[in-house]
Image 1 (cartoon, one colour):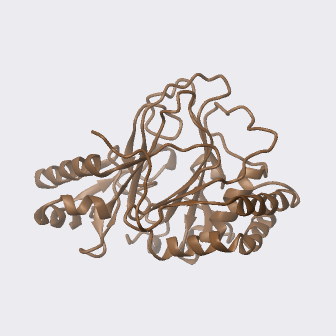
Image 2 (cartoon, rainbow, N blue to C red; image 1 turned 90 degrees about the vertical axis):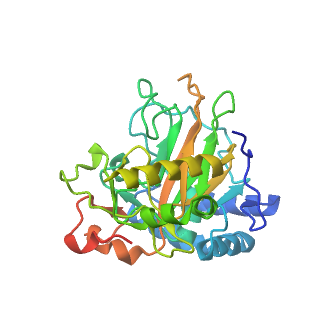
Length: 339
């Protein structure tokens, strides 16, 4: 199947900072990186990121606001020409659970943009609750269906099982793979649904599917509840599915899920991320995945940094007992209702 190597559409899915905007963002990120104690997960540092996000270049702030209002046909936004470390990117980490605790220039830029969109959040059972997480290949985990793998990553909604899953997922490229073949794949419900017959769409809206949580979240056995894969408006629905963990509860639902996956394979777009690129995927409307690549574990492998954004921070308050950015995995009964 042939798919475009980059998303381009009239809605302006690609936004490139000009040189003046690049320099202004670099200066602002450097200022944030210098805020004591220089730790991304520190409450005071996060507060500074929230405050300084209002000083982003005007044209960028305007585009971010447009994206939160309507993410467009492809339900994603690719920002280009963001600042990276002037002294060069350090060696790519290669250990399980790698995160970015220190306030580097790219991490500061990533947090500024994330906080301009909403609130950057994390989950306590995922990457030890870090706000900025490394997406890197790990030796021995090549076949893993997750951020540490290097085989084809199945299309999925991020944390599809969770009622308070991220609204937006941000992926910033610090370094691509050696052969420059690893591509981010994005499939929007607005491209998928028109490919499905009305009876199939109707089945996908019905509570005939289970989405299981990863073992790392330590959710109680049997905690998954039947739900629809499509939710909300029948004319412009949301989509929640992970093709590695979604189970149909009957034969008709299984057939519909298979047709959905085939429609996803026909409609996804590919983006070849380069250093300084930051892709935001609307996790309510689009699935994402990755093509395969071959890591060398030589310090120069592919390295993305990831953040999660909630547009409605208040909604998760019951899972944030201290009022911070990290959600507990165990949800009180009144927070488990699906959107």
